[in-house]
Length: 603
Ligand code: ADP
Ligand code: MG
Image (cartoon, rainbow, N blue to C red):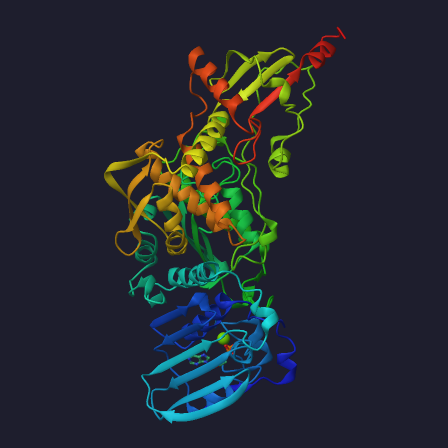
């Protein structure tokens, strides 16, 4: 019995209109959703060349009878909506009846499908035109192969990014759906490289373990709450506050197991972690919200990742409270309220949150602006009348150029360290004023330039680690790592696969302490994951050098004796750019004697 029908206009017109086929990842998402709606228990995704050449999704779901196999390619043909009222209580992931025709119109698509009984059907479509159709016997389920994406729309083909970027986007969706459906087996392969493989497991916990490994799972607090009559249920896995991610890719939100990006949820998470995480860092959150279907409108956006809750503030507060309850029930957590709490793990005040708005809408899932605020650091005991005229650190970082307040030539000579402020900032003088130097970023700059010089000369010092360091990585980061292995090798990191989601690091640059290697790699990959542009090799080299230098540099809150201070200041002055650290933050603040005199009313 055929089940698919073309929606009458009155329903079709009420469906959020728009294109869903932006890039390989959006196709994979639609195809996986179809397989899930078809009741599959096994979904395999195969990708070639980041999906540009081939995307294939194979499932063992209910399949389609011959008649449906043809109908499903028509616009607004769906088996998931019958009455206008169904739109207000959508229980399936799909409902628009637009994915297959849209995909078929911009690629060469082959559909092979076999229902439980009857003969199977294969249909080939090119640019929306049916080219061939035959009957056959196939394994039960559906396989859709999408080749030569955008072959007939060159303008859109141009917008595809590098293979690794597209693959990482695909991986992101597969990871999401794998997390939300532990009872289903997912396999994602790029060529022969198995990016993700998750046999069915009984619960979310085990699925998280499969996807991310035990290191991360051990850091997650699990909490579950049911909200009586409203029918709202929240289940959440959240990280303890010492887990700090430098991008938002570790936040996974699901509403009725549909992956969503939602500002209200984002905000609730941010509120829950307020004062616990430094600004610019993010927790790991895997959140499952279950609400009655009629309390959430999913017909908001063609990609179906935005939702509208009927009771928005109730939802917000419930999510926030569930996370807080989870975190506070965990005895290992100490709230970090002091200024020290706003230090990032490597001993620096966290860089300003610069949510790369340019990639809003570009990231497949998360694009709502988001920041976790921590109290700003204040330099204590600043003499009030001295109006410090330097720009704010954020602005300086944003400018990325040499800040104007550090008028540099005048500082280059005869800098005399006087002591340290809070074991973090070197106080010094030169002929014309007072100078403050951030010891961490100063050292970072010194190391950075030495490092690049050594590397250029092919003289980078490398150490073999006593024990290989084994690091577990999420699938997306494995993909990124694959791509940067040659550059890592050149930087003295010998990295090898060590099991399906782990790598082993055998050597590292000599300036690093072994204990810093894992953190460094994670931070580097977090950073690369956040990059939107395909990184050119030069930028990548600098990024690696900057990250290595940062992890090797003297921390703040470290007492330095006079010899060390002199050495550091001397080395800093020899660098090419002593004023700005490799991440764009200021190194030196300078108070001109004239300014000081004016402040003392002596001018
Ligand atoms: P929608 O999912 O919104 O209904 P699609 O264009 O994605 O629209 O799919 C159209 C129809 O084709 C679906 O309603 C479903 O009946 C059928 N279909 C698509 N993919 C599959 C699949 N993998 N297995 C079984 N049926 C499928
Ligand atoms: Mg669909």
